[in-house]
Length: 183
Image 1 (cartoon, rainbow, N blue to C red):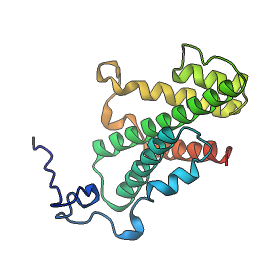
Image 2 (image 1 turned 30 degrees about the horizontal axis):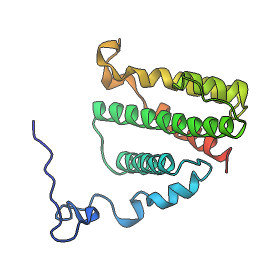
Image 3 (image 1 turned 45 degrees about the vertical axis):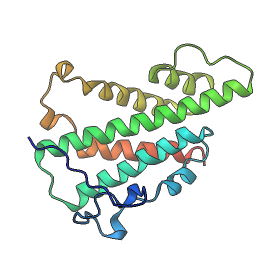
Image 4 (image 1 turned 60 degrees about the vertical axis):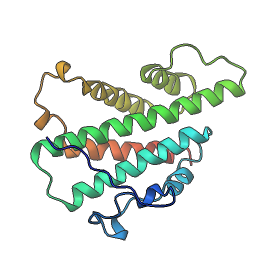
């Protein structure tokens, strides 16, 4: 198997110029939005570092969608790309819910509590704070289960057929519905 080969730009420490000796993957109109765009889209997330990480994940989602839409993707790679999309969506929602619940509890003078996993956050977001509705709670709870399939030994299915474009599209749609609830 080949290894990754990174080239770095000489002179100033400009990471954006790294690998500039390579072929461009997408034309400018197909490139992901800058992180600043996504930071604005997710401005309801109060923790700046968390909002930046969400913005980077959103760039990765855009990149993944554009990659799929522009190139012929092989069967197994398609499934694994969809798996990555599902995992990224779950991670973004989990991070946003953590921030929202932490902020709400802090403002109310309540402790955050020791249990902050995705299940607990979803439960609090739905039952205690009404940040999400029942359908969204169920959807993201099921998505959380899919994210747990990262352990290959736990999978009782074949990776090449496990994740579909339809599931990935539904996750992206639910992510956008989630975001729009707070802007």
